[in-house]
Amino acid sequence: MSPRLSALRRPTRWRWVLWVALAGGFLLVNFHRVSTGVLSGPLARTFDATGTELGFLHASFFYIYAALQLPSGLLVDRFGTRRVAGVGLLAMSVGVVGFAVSGSFLAAFLSRAVVGLGGSVLFIATLRFLANWYRPREFATMTGLTVAAAGVGGVLATTPLALAVESTGWRNSMLVAALVGLAFAVAVVLLVRDRPADAGFEPIDGVTPPAGFPDLGTVASNTRRVLAAPSTWLLGFVLFFLLGTNFTVLGLWGVPYIVHLYDVSVPRASNYVLLGNLGLLVGPPVVGWLSDRVGHRVPLMFAAVLAFVLAYSVILLTVTPPLAVVGAVLFAANFTAGGNILAYAVVKERHAAAASGTVTGTVNSIGYFGAAVFPAAMGAVLDAYWTGETVAGARIYTALGYRVAFGIATLSGLLSLACLAWFYLRYVREPTGSARPADAEPETVED
Image (cartoon, rainbow, N blue to C red; front, side):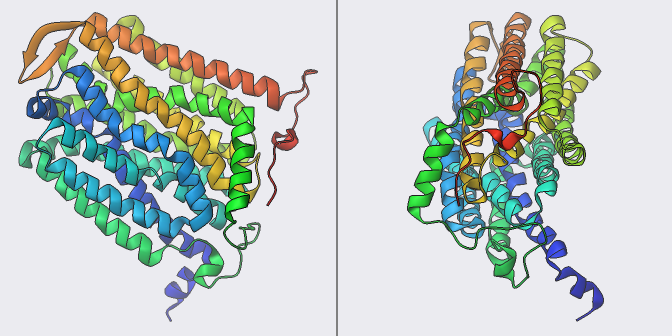
């Protein structure tokens, strides 16, 4: 064996190959959950859809996705990353094919729900993989890199997708994406292993994955403890407001907002939404790395949520700032996702390793219910301010309607800040003002 191949067979090198296979699958999850921003015009024309209906179509992914985050965590804890992620990618690809060939709004709605069904397991499965293959001081960094991979998917769902749709149509573009998903499903099944021991390696220094999969009784006990912990719900609602807003703006209403109020083409509008996805690409690994180095997570989360509020308030107050400012706002608002990912590290550190998938799945589930609620809510607000005009079959909304929509975005950031403050006061600082460690709360589960 060559020295290069021999080095690759070290667990600290080989784990990167396995992570790439999983991160590639999660890249596709984010591509599909935000692609409706570029597809909104073609979908409105194809299915003669209103803004509210487009909101429901976009959110159909998140209804299933959010509901299955806790079950996903249970499945991953019980059956492991490889099997759960492989089946999830296969189901997601089948749903994409169904979406691409849909002949009615209902068929498209149900197919996109299947996409959410398959995609629902990928992030939690990857977090479980990280907990088994990476040291605790590396966890936030790797979670950030995983979310950055999702940012790449978001970038591909902007200008590149817009150009592909103009060239080949939205249906053919989705079929190509389905084929890519099938390729990643095969890669996960062939390459990924749940623990270093399953790949023939000695345990990685500082990492103690569970020796086997917990039985159903242990999973049930862990679930009860996780759901009974107030900290789970507080951190979950932090994500509810932040994820719900960002995925709605990036994934659905960002492109129409720029097209309608600035009178530019969809590909050009997509360039500015692309900047938002670049924020998602850069922010999580930077903030995750910083958190792992300085050892503080909650203060960085505070800074991120405050930046989120300030960013969206710019559009709330000005409605149509220069397009460069819109791009900067979207970049900043999604850069703050680096603070979001710290919630997973904080909540994981409050529970034992056997409950890793369960607790991260629970928090993720609460967060993605926001992504299921906000699209239709913003769509209903915009429909209330419809001008009565359409362009190429798509409705045109007023500047006041978009001001109200971005007012909702700003308010959601303030509510997230309130939840985080509550968590900080109850769990991070003693009433006397002295700091206490994250594991001081007596809610830790047993292996």
